[in-house]
Length: 253
Ligand code: NDP
Ligand code: 8X3
Image 1: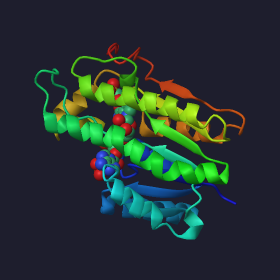
Image 2: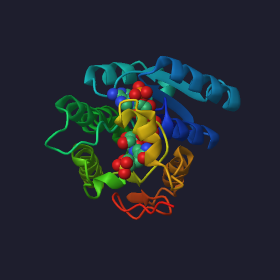
Image 3: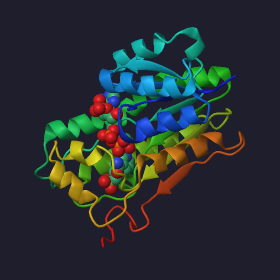
Image 4: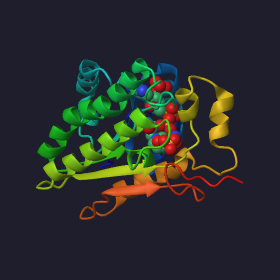
């Protein structure tokens, strides 16, 4: 019986790469996101490569708890027993000092990066506990280890993801469930384009003079943690580009 992985934010970047890597590892993948066209295109490529039962699409916004519940409840019976939940959907908005940042940007990051993870965890983990199997993999960041200039609220949301992940690991320690936090450094995706509200030049500069990680590098790590033997719980993984030391120190050529 193939395992089922649900990936949030599968329409781009790390989430899309995770969906591809899980499908390549013979998981059936529930791909979720807000962008229907991008989900359709990923669905087409996954099913063409891995067969018609390789993927299932759910369109919803992780910030909307009602939409999360309806989407997960709408899963056909054969897709309901989720083995791996990857809470990946998230974003940074802005890089202004905390005394100049935009309240709307801050609230969107808090709603998506923190409440989105909680919404999905609260809906899916009870079924995992009932079935006596499951793995929750949350996408943190090196940004959650320590604040960097202008990172303020984004860094705070990723610190919160760490605390939420650690808290869940404590709360399910009496069960066979495993809980993992992945903390990537610089990964070249749409992340910086979103952060800088579509300013592509500014986004490209983030990756100048350093070979950044790719989304596939992070997906490899995610799938590795999911495939560890059942008695092995990889609690936390920090993955940096070779010339990045932490959230602030990046050596550029
Ligand atoms: P991308 O912008 O490429 O992908 C982000 C994904 O999250 C998109 O699929 C996006 O969908 C989705 N998403 C955003 N908001 C929502 C929402 N409200 N509901 C549902 N889906 C949503 O960035 P990354 O792939 O880089 O980011 C993925 C995760 O990795 C994030 O949590 C990010 O914080 C984290 N991360 C990224 C790093 C990097 O350097 N890139 C480093 C460390 C962590 P849509 O197209 O609909 O917006
Ligand atoms: C994304 C990595 O360093 O741009 O979380 O915040 S960083």
